[in-house]
Length: 132
Image (tube, rainbow, N blue to C red; front, side):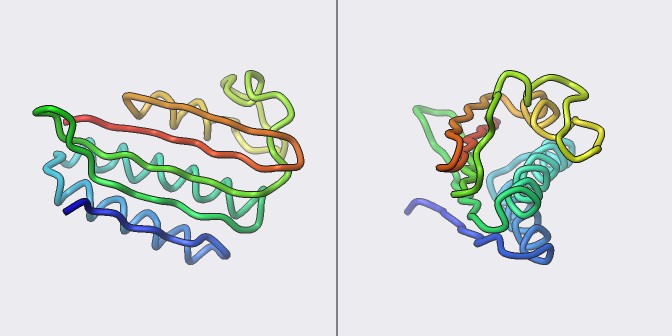
């Protein structure tokens, strides 16, 4: 049976719920403390971006099993304003709200796989994966 948790992001408390769900699944999947922290941090960044920039969206957390590999996949999606320049948004230090600009590039560094699809006026979907 596939393990999936979905957290709808509508407020700052939902960001905390997404973090908790990710940490719990990472622990259940068998990740060590360091990787649990990496996954939790990445989910925190993505869900916070949903809340700050789109207002609402969802985070889907799924346990993966591929051949003999186990891992996790997190999909963060919203129907917000979209990102006009994805390449620029992935640069260290780039920010549209006076933050440190480490969110997306930091998330990419923390995970094994990172994909982003964004369209202005339609929304953004970020998919990240971490393997044991």
